[in-house]
Structure formats: structure tokens, C-alpha cells
Length: 292
Image (cartoon, rainbow, N blue to C red; front, side):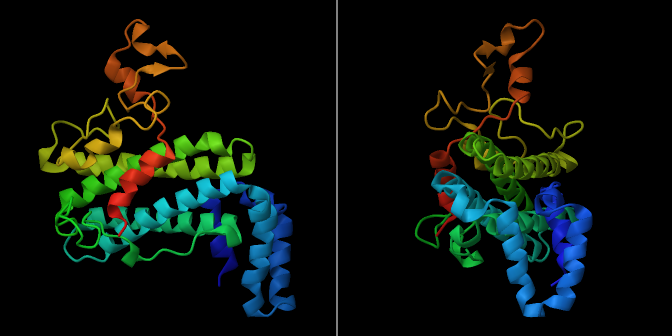
């Protein structure tokens, strides 16, 4: 167990981790003492106690926050196993694709581990790859929605874009429910920003190459599914429930102002400027297609 590596990984999704634990100098002083004072087997328990104190932990999170974080944890498991299976599939990607997907896979695992740490004993039971069916056939109980997902690069990237954009909209939709816990809210929005970068890169990969018309566009315009196989991604960009609270990605009204009423702002530009949030029920409806 390399404590410093763990801290370095957590710092990538939560830059304030040292301040939450203690001053950086004191943190390293504590860890130096671990080796002398504690048996190796006891170190994980000591680490867990420190993080529980740092993040206010399960007894102080409240049911609403716990539910939101467990919902996020389910999505992170979904994404991690999807990318892990893609990385382990031979001949699905060229080398450049494989390097990018591996980084994204590793980011998703950090999110899983981070959320488990914050939730502590309130975390859902760990999910495994066997809990998911990324063809959408729900373990063979219905016709697959996306056949050949691990044999067809464009099907894989289309589903990856759908997962990433769903994650971005889900974290934004969950933010108001975390508003009373600044620490958890900030950590969740840090993950949201990582998911947004994944979405942008996946979209560039999907739209690049021989089918690109000019430079590949890495952002959403209106409700466009974008890139090859738009039918796979199209359901992600529609409205949530209720639609007036969770409009589609084509929404051009923000804070009650129709942005197209501003001179020289087009509907495309207005829609591109914001990611619209999505409610829990709609996100689960999308994700449930890939749960057995």
C-alpha cells in the first residue's frame, strides 16, 4: 500500500485533500510515523479514519447526500468496467486510441475509489463487470441495443460519448442536492469537470479521422448526436423529467433570459454555452439499459 501514491491520485480529483486532512507538512509527518507506530495491516484503517474525519463522513452526510453519492458511484462503476473491458479487448483500438481510453479508464477507477472513501460504510455493495451488459441486451433478455460494441470502434466510442455526456449532465443535476455540504459539492464538481474533459476528448476521437469534415468539433450543438452512429447517442441529449426543470441540450434560455434575444447570438451558440443538468430518474433510465 503506497500511501503517497494514493494521496497523489486523490489530489487529482480533489486538490484540497491535504488541507482537509491537515497542513501538508503535518500530513507527511503523520505518515512518516505510521511506519514506526503501526503494523502494515493497520494502515488502511488509519487512512480510513483520517478521510472520514476530513470529509465529514457517512454519519454526517445525511440521506440525500448519501443517495446522490451512491447514484454517482453506480455511474462510475458503469464507466470504469466499460472502459476496462474495452482496454482488454484485442484489436479494438489503434495505439493512440488505446492510450487515451486507458487514461480515461484509470480516471474512472479513481472516481470509484474516491466516492467509496467519502461514503465509507454507506457505500453501495461493490459492483462487478458481471453486473453490466454493454450491448444493452440485459444479459440476453432482449435484443441488443448496441451489438458488436467491443468489436466495432465506432459503436464503442458512440457509447462512450453517451456515458460521458450522461455523467456530465448527472453531476450537474445532482449539484443542487449537495448545496448544503460545500466539501462534498466541491469534490463532486471536480469529478464533473473531469467527466466533461473525457466527453470532449471522446467526441474529438469519434468525429476525427477519415470521416471528419474539417477539424473535429468537441462540443455539443443543440441536440445533435454527433459523429458516426448518432442513433446511439441521441437519447442522451433530450429533456429530463420534468422537462421544464431539465430541458434538452438545445435549450437557449438561461436564468429566464432567452439568449437568442441578445444581438448576434444564434440558437446554436446559445445551446453550446451551457451543459444542461439531468435528473436522477432520467439518468437511471439511461443507465439501466446496461444493467443486467
